[in-house]
Length: 237
Image (cartoon, rainbow, N blue to C red; front, side, top):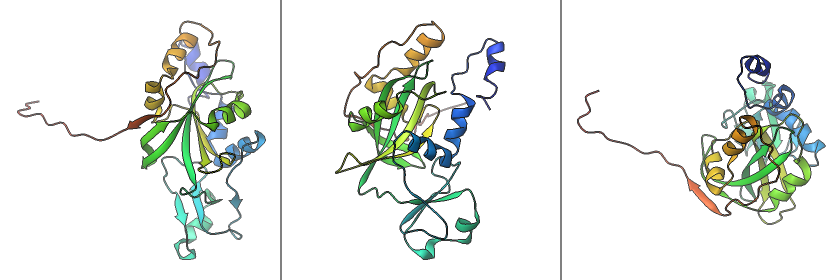
């Protein structure tokens, strides 16, 4: 909705930093973003027909988020009628976490839709779809992303792209999904030195041009997020 109404905000002197409606729609539909990956020479998990699949398989909705309504099916008995009748649920090839590492990559695209920075964050622990422990890694994904999606029509600001990278064969890379927004784990990239907010201010408030690609962020920086309790004695409010 924000993307579609962007012009209304601009008429009121408000800049909304969001990608084009066309690109946002691609990201909101997992099947369409799979087509986007394929057209950019990025491998994807195979989607099975619901009458012709292989176990184990992974089920997820085409428009889901935060791992809601996702299922790892290892046995036929785990499948339900809803899995078959719900048209929004996709039957996908399972990419084994024992063989693949999962990365969320923070990508910054300038006003001209050119990639300026890519920071892969290895997802070590995840809780309810949000990363709990992650590490910034300069690995093959940086060049892989630069080679394939250094330009995305309609993409601006921060977008997050998820990839699976094989633990032993780094030529095996699978694109999972793209979200046209800041991800919950972006503070790791920021603390590593990828200062996207600074670039946003320079581009959209100071009318500066981001001229160079930025790759001098800190490698192997680990971030652990946690819940804490704060006790205030004698509180009268």
